[in-house]
Amino acid sequence: MKKALITGITGQDGSFLTEILIAKGYEVHGIIRRASNFNTDRIEHLMGNKQLRLHHGDLSDSANLNKLISTIKPDEVYNLGAQSHVAVSFEVPEYTAQVDAMGTLRILDAVINHYPEARFYQASTSELYGLVQEIPQKETTPFYPRSPYGVAKLYGFWITKNFRESYGLFACNGILFNHESERRGKTFVTRKVTVGLSEILHGIKKESLKMGNLDAKRDWGYAKEYCEAMWMMLQHSSAEDFVIATGRTYTIRDFIERSARYCDWEIVWEGEGVNEKGIDKKSGRVIIEIDPRYFRPAEVELLVGDASKAKKELGWEAKIDLDELIDIMMKHDMKDASYKKVLQLSDNS
Image (cartoon, rainbow, N blue to C red; front, side):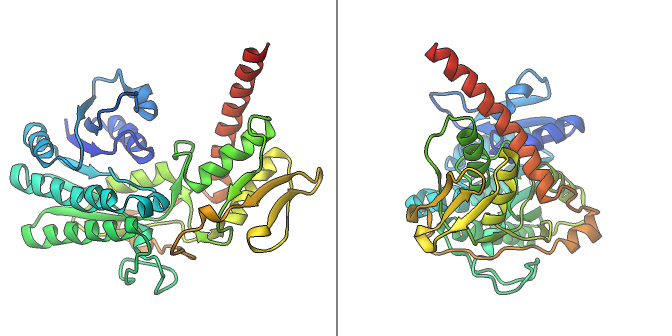
């Protein structure tokens, strides 16, 4: 039985990857941070599975990482752990660097010192491209990160490549463009939209949804498909870096309009700049307002990936389009909002 070690196992990608690996017969080891509250919601349905084993640890603790690698001796290591919120990285840049940059170095060093036979996957990001130098972005496109998160991930990308070239480690960077799902954190823009609209419709959220830059363009795919690509990279005959993307781009405004259809709303836009509002055409209700607090200090305006190398060498390509992705997310969040409303009514009765 193959063994895999996953950092960030309790996150969106970690939970999907765990399901995929368990289905393939792996023994899956996951690193979780100690917390006073349970933080395993996304993998709760897997907790009784004998193939899953959890260990307390942190990417800031090299002694712990060395101990885990030497004890588990994993065939595959997936480094998905990170402070992954771009806006938050401006508030906690040092912590972001410690986890996303130095954390990658710590786990790579543990692999080289204790089990260099392991194959290593580094979760890189389209935020590396930042102020884009080429459209679409591919593996050879120059990087220009625009946030502490992007800069920290840039170090993670290059130190992974350096260990591959210096020590012969089978180490891959997956440059994943935005990938979403019903398990995406609620502070990320797509989930903020689907949860917010669902709660406004059900009367749980009384005020309008506050947003930042509506015209930023992103390449959105389905997270579960992207996690399958991670596994495929480590099965490849050679260690290489791959862009994983749909090749299609949409604005945040597009995402809002398409999501609003599930609430039977047709959003029309009035005003300009910070005074712009998204209004339901039928009722006249203000659904969306602009809040300058959500503007980035340095905006990334356009991200769209070219995944032709992944298609050619791995046989991977995105199948779920944006409307199908929104369908998955809105159905989940509408159901959740409906359940919350029932509880709310029960509490008030």
